[in-house]
Image (cartoon, rainbow, N blue to C red; front, side, top):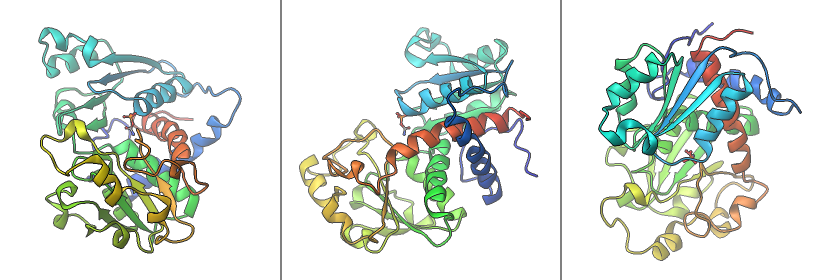
Amino acid sequence: MINLAGRDLLDLESLTAEEITAFLDTAETFTEILRRDVKKVPTLRGKSVVTLFYENSTRTRTSFEAAGKYMSADVINISGSTSSASKGESLRDTFLTIQSLTADCIIMRTPFSGACHQAAQWVSIPVINAGDGTHEHPTQGLLDVLTLRQAKGSLGGLTVAIVGDVAHSRVARSNIWALSKLGANVRLVGPGTLLPPDAQELPVEVFTDLREGLRGVDVVNVLRLQLERQTKALFPTQREYSKLFGVTRDALSVAKPDVLILHPGPMNRGLEIGGDVPDMPRSLIEKQVTNGVAVRMAVLYLVLGATG
Ligand code: CP
């Protein structure tokens, strides 16, 4: 029996396949609660959870809040722009303050890669990474593999193409580790300027031609162009990018006929993904969002050492 109580969740790279599976199996049990009319259980009554977001978010922040509330935790949301960071308070003092306010765990999103690992050294309560710079987004990786496991039964032997701005994507990194540890083959597909410089050290195959990269794949996970993290021009125009790397119905015609489509969101329809592709029957994008709540319930449940 794997015990994750008191542990941080900072990345998927350092987790074993068994630990990832423990999160997925627990999330699976929580999907039943999400189908109920009354989505409320007393599991985390008396626990308090703080979300600390230094970047915008719709899905991750809301689903962590929903996850905590559905399990009866007290959830306190702090946004970077309204915190005392704007008055010069350091991240270390912010974390120590939240711990002293008797929080039981801190969930942070930050533009700085590695900041969650650093913060976890400063406090004794669990720290959960809700996306750090271009490094990792572990709960997104978990919800993506949960969604695929539900659709396919197992990840073993599947070929998954991660397409687009991989270099700036924390979602891609978490997916690479989770998928490869669970037995899937991972392809990275994009223009050379948007592929990670350390791709040769990752458990992946690399393609710079969209059709070659999508040929015969079981799953396509489409990434947004993360313009906010790009510090120089990496492709001539968005129109050209869309023409060469946009995942359209036509581009998908070389994949397996039952290809599944994922996108972590937020999407830019008509840019990285064909405008009608998210609405295709093979798209699991809305399912990903719902599974995001179940995964975050599982993460809170396990790291807070809940029982029952
Ligand atoms: N996928 C994801 O992290 O979305 P948000 O930025 O809306 O949280």
